[in-house]
Length: 224
Image 1 (tube, rainbow, N blue to C red):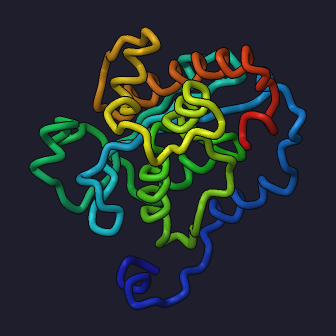
Image 2 (cartoon, one colour; image 1 turned 60 degrees about the vertical axis):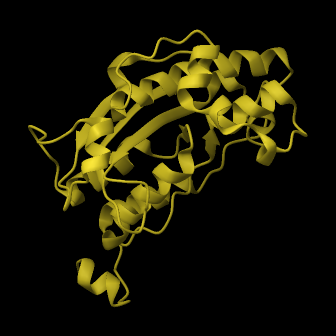
């Protein structure tokens, strides 16, 4: 069942890899599990634009963390078969003709297997998740079941306090470039999915260490 069936509103059966992903959430993460024992997957997407309804993912990058360590070998990057390109987005990510692309079904299977039930992290992560959910809808996927942390809002919470009205924040102050610069993270390989995931992972480690100094030392304290 393809895009036409989805557009016409026909029910899409779940692919086996979607069912396998969903089966991994029978047991929840304990609120008292220390941050040092938590598993994170930090991800980013590069897209043809910023409208999840009309745009498409060009590339996906991610890297894993366990507590305060980041195995660089855990990083992945995938380029997708994309229906259209957008001239304005190319100016940002500069991806014209990827050498090797993944069919969407293969990408979906590999990506969900990679993420598993780990905590998903990203900067302005809501957009990335919306794009990924749209990409996987033809395979019966509805939404991510993982706990989610947005480093943008985690930084606000740690810097401004837990009762800070996030709607009053200065947008530019919490853009990825600005926050990374504030925490001494060099902006290497910016505007690639893998590069931005790596930057965000470094930012997460910095924020987790700050969180520990503020008494946030377990999953319950971090995710609230």
